[in-house]
Image (cartoon, rainbow, N blue to C red; front, side, top):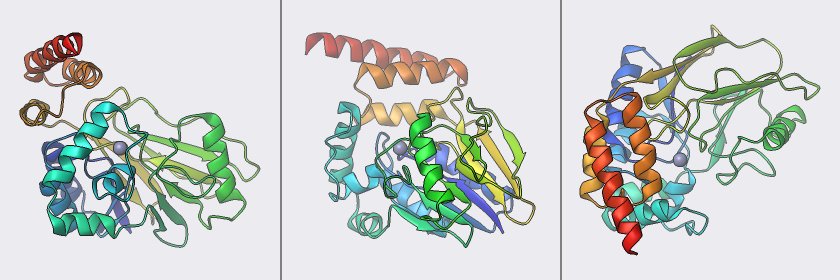
Length: 281
Ligand code: ZN
């Protein structure tokens, strides 16, 4: 099987369209979505609809559950909470019902498991797999057989990375945690925790949309990064008042500097306005 992996789309339609077209050209047999289809950006209905049409396997993330009311966004940042409140108001009922029907974890096949956040203490959409201790605890769930899989794909951190660990719990250095496109061959032994990166809001050193292609017969994992029309995404978010905090505007500005020239002026305007607004409040 040749799987395409997407995660953390966060209602960014421009990025999702580019990624789905790319995975189509990659001739994947099936697309797997690791959750957080909505939140932050302005096209939740269009994104959920496209994912429902194109992804064969989906799990929910914390933003999806918050958008349909099965999780209260108390641990969310102000920006994230504001976006969830807006999303709750516009999300069509059939898309809400779809998100509400999804699990936050599930097996993909006999060797592969899917979770939005972390495996420990139980598979969840809450904890971020960034700190060594949490990564070791999740590897422990695989090594002990509590989660019967050798490879686990996760999302939530918005950073493309592959961690490997041998059967004794000794972790190898993570592969390429800072963005860019890359490919690794998975070893026949040992355990893997893999994040395909975020489609709609990357938080590693690469602003482009992320996705992955996992070929189970070849044992290869490819991480891809793709340019998209970020200026248009920002404009739409801005039009709906979704980017209104200095933190997100500043991050957007950094992204704009890296990749999309057209977005620079827009991002600067958003940042300036956000700073003015927060100074007033
Ligand atoms: Zn997310």
